[in-house]
Image (tube, rainbow, N blue to C red; front, side, top):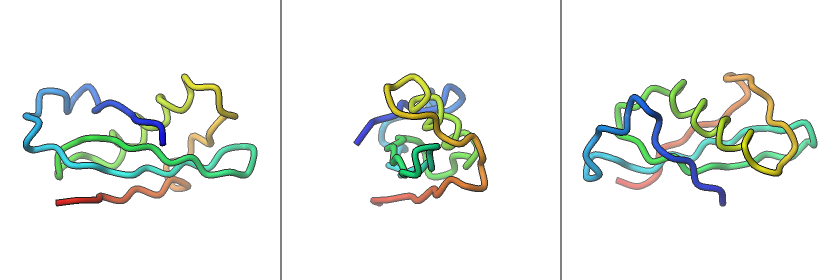
Amino acid sequence: MPRATRPARLRDAPPEECGCWLVALPAIDGKQYVYRVYAPEDALPADLFWEAWHCHDEGPHPRALDLFDAAVIRRIGR
């Protein structure tokens, strides 16, 4: 599973405050790509989405849809 970094506005959060989020992005090939984003519990969904989208966009995979409403964002752990 690809691993995204924390959004820039959340990078100052101490590691103990960060949890794991899964962000699923649909792509033009009909597949769904899931990214792990580490961020605090109070992270904004838009920050999580854009971090995963930019991570996907820089990779070798087919283009992901940049539609926020099409993404599935779930917090896991803690």
